[in-house]
Image (cartoon, rainbow, N blue to C red; front, side, top):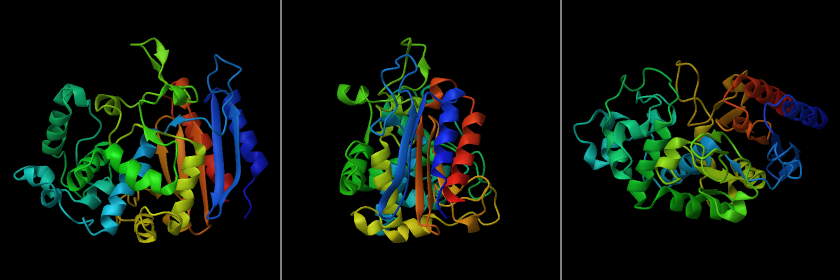
Length: 344
């Protein structure tokens, strides 16, 4: 069925008028590329001369988990350098005697690992990256693996450590050389951004420490603590780059990154009867069932990516909703209505 282009534009413009976000950029497409795209609102409400555009650079927050960590783990899976049921103790030898050794790659990708939930890394482990890594990997589990689905940023953080250990390369270099460059994602990078890209970047949350909205620097505190790049967040991208990435999900032969087999493996339920149902980082879109074959991942700054192999369609929505605050519900309603209009 044909998406309702005019209603999508009206919906997202309403979000601007209701101050859910200052501006939005979106794209909808298929394996052949972008079918439609648009933008509305301002890059920064304080400057009416700078509209949000299709070239706007956005802090994509937890979409980093998809365009970096999930993708890199997929290439390692394709190369048989790891299996989904490999325990971390078999991949990272210094975990002997620690509970984390029994957590598998699948547990982390499905958020069933039982690792601690959100926590202030600095308060727990200090500011030295090596101490943070050691502390996270040796932290006791708060429940046995496989018992419950509990979203936690630590899953992606730990998988980033796994990828770095197996390849002997830092995560930012891995993402750039193994995913973004092969796919032609020319702008996507970890922050902090260069001055040239900062000018095109949508500001996010107000930072009391600097007295300004964050712009070109990752909103996520863990990413900033670890120098701008980590498995949790820290990547910046554009609508065009994310459209390129989404197109590759439907037709992996376009580039040289992860395979069609990895996409197919990820876009199915791996959590059995546990709820909410989860694939490998991707999950069924709210308001849908797994059989609907509409999968999603969100970012805290106001971003989202949807994919449906059954319909042969994908969608990207980029907003900077954190500019106005952390209330999630208004954007959640817009995201759900956007999904319905795209995939109805």
